[in-house]
Image (cartoon, rainbow, N blue to C red):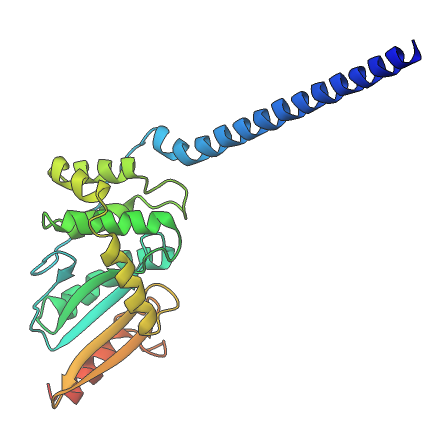
Length: 254
């Protein structure tokens, strides 16, 4: 009889252990499931929330615009801007400095200006915005998209540049949406955006915006580097675009 009782106790303990293990497994599965659902919500929420109002950018002339460049490709000086669409200082350059620079030096044939991104410098939305701008360039509306992206910036990685919003920007500037969607969804310019960043780091870019001025003197390629949104002409600061550009032109005898 005692053996039967001992057996019954062991069976009871095994049953209790199995029930405890079952509860633990169920709880673990439940926690994992809830965690996965929360993660999925975080990832997809930006693409579920309303696109919201799209701010229109004021039209701005870009002489001889071609893709992400403007000006005469044979101009004596080439300026490459390394930028990030989520960078507030880059937005300030676009709004306050770029118009004067273009009017004074790009429109007059002295500077060929090229916009380049810095990849994922600030975050994933930086990449998405840059790719969208390059895709718009396929329809010769890079600068319209560039301006619209900046006009709709409100913060860093806050959902300004989800694919849905970028597509809404594209529609607002009159792009062929089939062509644009194929380009953006297919990642056509992902490698180019990454190469922009690699090239920027190679020339010493550590912050945005930064500018590389390239020109040739007696067959020798020379460069000047500006880190920051310098004014075009301001004697009160250490340097500005006018001094750098005019110094390069003087070296070339122009």
